[in-house]
Length: 358
Image: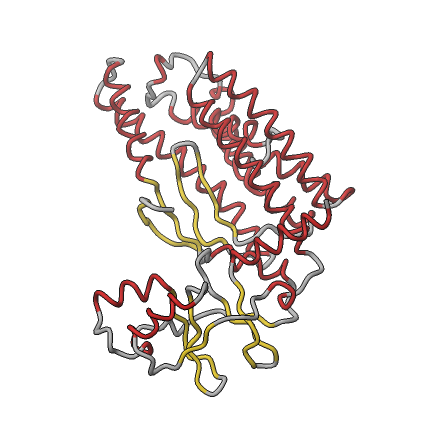
């Protein structure tokens, strides 16, 4: 995510903080100051917010580490003012695995709350917490109730929140992922509308959360629909069979001129049927300014790229293509280049399948 600060890495997962999180800390501190809090109280209040987000981070690692048990990587976790976002590589199609991954997050908060209760006992019932300013007496009591709130909030069956994903996984066991997602996403959008109207009277933050839930549910439903249309089809059915191959000694200027000759904006560089690299239109344009136009394209070509085989399932490669929306992927048949595939023609294939089905 852009404008995020990298703070570390654990278990192969990067941890980032979005810059708006820093604004949240400043706003919390300033609000405490305006309420007449002392300097130690302001420091404790800001420290409390940081501690809450450590709990949120542990929640997201609950998802990430459980996904790792099933061979699914989590590239990064981003902390935002409204919570955390774990970028899990893919959601497993097995609903039981999805259920375990999803439940693991709230369970972390349950464990934290239980530990705090065991330490505090009846002291978890707070008194004297004026104007939401945290004091030494209320720090851990407040942390207990925040974790309880996180559990309750996360299990609301509003897709794409944890509760919605739990519902989807449970429904998918009985009726399949496609129908389960449709039901869970529609319910999530219904809940989002409720949050929006509550936000009109109580808090603008609820309106922001409502928008996140509504559009998140819609996007997830569309993604699963796309996967359903791809299921049972192989790369050969969707790949582009007409593409441009150029020699590695072709000049940058000559390659740029070829852009005007047809519709293709990306080129494969090959010698004797062996792929050496790929060049995209943006690279050509930037190279015309920074390189000698008469230099060979081998000087600017991309030499690391993913390839697919004709027989691979489209549903299996889709997330790789989604991760690189501008990617251009050669397709091979027993090592021989037979086509290329990218996100645009994958989406066109989905549209065709949708039209044929409906």
